[in-house]
Image (cartoon, rainbow, N blue to C red; front, side, top):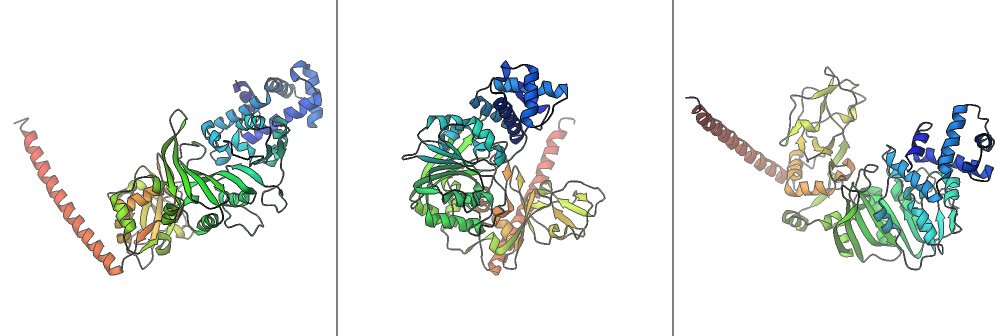
Length: 526
């Protein structure tokens, strides 16, 4: 239905939501200037009106023809269909970020479901919700619905298509002290992911966009109000300022529900796991927890559901409900209940991300270790790729003896310990680097991470659902057992001795098998 219009737009502009909105807003200006249906106006009248309305004299006949035909097609659409046109643009544009993510209708039904005693609603950054908001605003005429735009230049466009009496548009930044004095019964938000907020507001706990927007939006809740928001999964378990934010929420607000959304839900725009959380005023008691996925037909479904008690969250000291939803192994339960001292990796090591490699050079001065060079817990140095680059510029990436390499992407978790070579080595961005302090033996930590419990902990921080995606910042939050250095060395020695014995037996068994197989095969041609 919208293909012809989109094709016409693609001939003149880069197909993004903001660019299309700009073109549509020109249409509304011309339509207002003409004062009647464009389809009922002669070609020259429309072109003259376009020139006067847009403040330019259009002399090129091809441009005139383009605008005339484009505006005639748009004029055939009603206002909801214009928003549906933008939905289609979203599907076609190639940008992959939360600002252009398409939220499945079934999930919008969850975000916008009715709430008792609602009179005033705040829809933060209206571009995120597509044509769905048209029906919502039209249906709930008794609600006063306040609206902001992600791009303030889009305000006039949305005033044209959502010109209902109950729709009120707000200008300005939510971080401005005089943004708005009103409080709301319901706030709906899907804030931008991966942006750092630049503001003079010193009350922010964290400048990460998702955390900062959540904190600010909570200020605008009425006593019985609810904030429904989609956040990256790191908000549930990351440390530092994000951990301080969770503590702030736990002390001042109530969590009604947490849904863990796999990376499929907003694919391909957002390729990480996210959380949908409802905050209200009060104290957290029981939390409705679900894991939500999307099937190959684009329909969302619930993989599991559970009521999580406040005490269970306090026990894991975060909001990472995936740990509570997935059945833990007996080894993990035994580890969690053990009295062994445990520390976050960030307290005993430095965790780094490998370098992004753009150009290879067979005769380069720096060797690069990639995932393919890690096999059976060892690093194969015999066939490393090379790059040519300045050593000083790459000093932060140069590997040191004992650095632990952990796969950041791929299909399976691979781990290896770097041993000093007679050439300079760095790790690619497909690997994370753990550099232990003097309290921890690298081989000891590798052995733990390769154990059933270690791999279960690494899997718990995976951000992807189909392909492995482990962020180096999330590795910092894994709790590992910290024994005395003597006990660590004893474990390493026992492990190495057992592995050497195993390898010797495998080698001997392999030789016997090859010999026996050869005897059998020779009988075919004796």
